[in-house]
Image 1 (cartoon, rainbow, N blue to C red):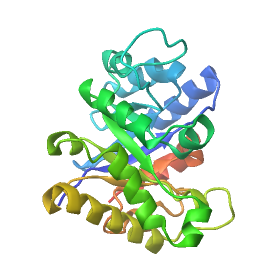
Image 2: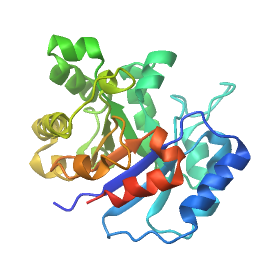
Image 3: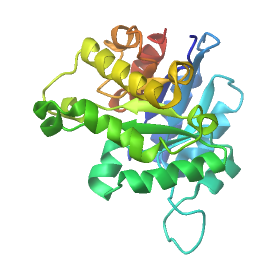
Length: 254
């Protein structure tokens, strides 16, 4: 199965305008050579979406991602951004359910189910994040916990819609804790996620879904992590804020 291999940058809430422009300049100043199944997704803050779109428009392998969208279609929700607005700009991906959104902004599986449905209705491809905390990992219940995130937010979707989803697995316990997830641990969880999808939608659908790894991917470890059979790229935080580092990550795609 020749699944799409994706290097997704998540800038989070970083960079001033001039810094964002400089980073995009550095990323695009020399051609990047992609295989047909490889893609970059630039997850930039809302104020920089138009800028990123202008850089990406002449690059068939580069798409732009929003970092969030609202659970409402439109209306009196000051400060929110709708899926329809993002689609009307030409944004392709939207990151939903990131561990920081779940932890700091109280996003539940039920809220995320609404966000996913609205994204799909408006032609956006959700990059749906899932993952467990250190407490869950140490209790040995990580498989059930992450499977439940998929079940409650995604498994009501039709097969047709589900096939548009990209999954990003974040081992929250290995981010900023001093603990490190190995490439083998990443593969183990990705294989489990694929088996859970297969149980719901069948092997063919499961084997078509890109599952990205979101646990401190950088230039030095990208190739090893992405080389695992069920790892289809990464959702990259800090390393995506440095052009040279992110270009190394892209080069690690298989």
